[in-house]
Figure 1 (cartoon, rainbow over the protein chains, first blue to last red):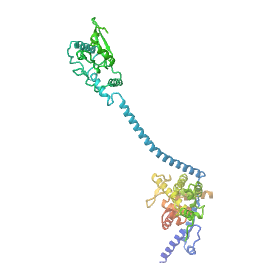
Figure 2 (figure 1 turned 120 degrees about the horizontal axis):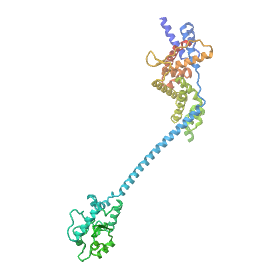
Figure 3 (figure 1 turned 60 degrees about the vertical axis):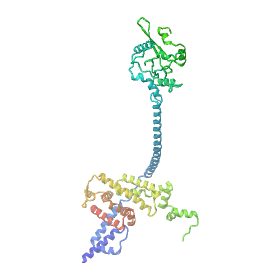
Figure 4 (figure 1 turned 90 degrees about the vertical axis):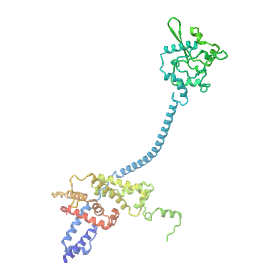
Length: 277
Length: 213
């Protein structure tokens, strides 16, 4: 019982020793206990030395450039923060600029596609219909075409129908009137020519010439009526001079002025068939 | 009963705590000045605490360069959070708490990275914390200074082997000389827990430092 009380007292004493500050004076009760208890005295000595050793570690000083480095770090952080905020704003404006650029590019692209030859919504109808014979039918060699034209001319002189192999005559019905007169009013020819130029030097001479029947050219009053849609096409005439050497003459496209001239001369093609141009 | 006589009195009373008014050179006054952009006030705070914080983190981490970096990080955080600083406790408590958290984070990072002393480590008997093997050097030393240096080194190494929950209160109490109340605020634990941990820490140290006692 006495030992238990003593050990309990020692525990309390040691706890007080531990909690006391290093320079704190111990209470008289503790001092009295330590005089009679060697273990507690040893504990106190070890504790005192240990705390003295730990306290001897002292304060480690910061390096001399501590403040300089700290300032640099703070400045760097401020710059970083401002740069980050600026980057945030810039990224927003950059995104807007990128979006605008994309929209502009798409717009220009669509415009360029729209202006590209053969892709216009209004022009291709005329151009494609006009170029249809040359696309759908194999292009015959120039001499062959010329021969066919010559045959047609000769046959037309004889009032015989054109051969079935002849390309369809666009714009001409059986009465020799234009089917597309409504489409080609005024500048229709110019539009067609423009579309032809855009598609890149379309040689009308390579396509088969329209067959103009002589009886269809003669109107009721006896004057020659030349179809208006025949104007853009050149006329190729193959002539045989009787020596076995055929000559091909390409007549340029007939303008309105030429049409008037032709109307005054009822049979220009026939008259020139013997080389009397 | 206090009465507010003028608008300026009202503004002053609302904006600044009375303790700041009492001592314009106090830590609270300096942090208030820092809050409104006074760089000199912050520099004064740094000069007051740079050595203490560096030393404390060094005792915690046993790595001087790392301790300097973490001390700087502590001040950076103080500067950044100056607007949110509340003068409920002493500024020293506040800055030591930041430093303690940084040091403990660093210790945990090291533990994850296995960045331990090359002298090796052994698991303690309770199996929780790795303990560095640090046998006492019993060779006789000729010079007293060398003895002291060796002893300090041994103490530092012994402290470095303490579990972090014992290390911080021991350093704050026995190296820094903080009161139990302040330590409990810094560590945000009860005073009883602080006392208990310090006692356990000293017990660990006593075992390690038997040869020097």
